[in-house]
Length: 108
Image 1 (cartoon, helix red, strand yellow):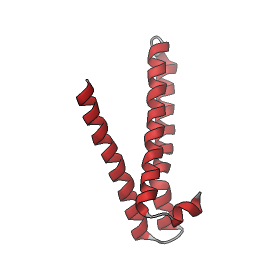
Image 2 (image 1 turned 90 degrees about the horizontal axis):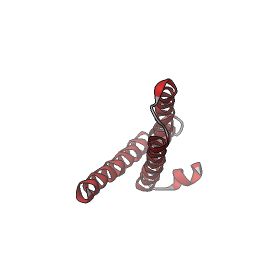
Image 3 (image 1 turned 120 degrees about the vertical axis):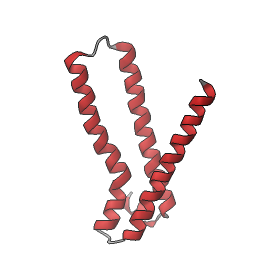
Image 4 (image 1 turned 90 degrees about the vertical axis):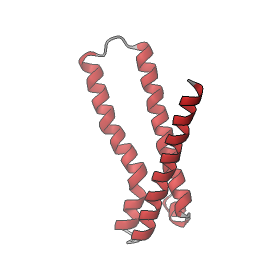
């Protein structure tokens, strides 16, 4: 997979990183929706679970967004390509946020 990412243009790599982040966030939203319907009052273990999930999510999304650009910058010493890939990732995520907000406003 790493060889594929190294050969791909920054826009493709940014899109894949953004897509992975969106899929992960969607799965977490489904988990929250399930927990909201099935659990009663959260109590200690509910808050404990939320905090652990926050730490885990920060690690996963940090890896998805910053992992490959950091690899390019540190290991391959390709600073410009790393910044470009990160910029594409953030732009794709911003685009998805704007589209999602528009759809929420439109359909609610």
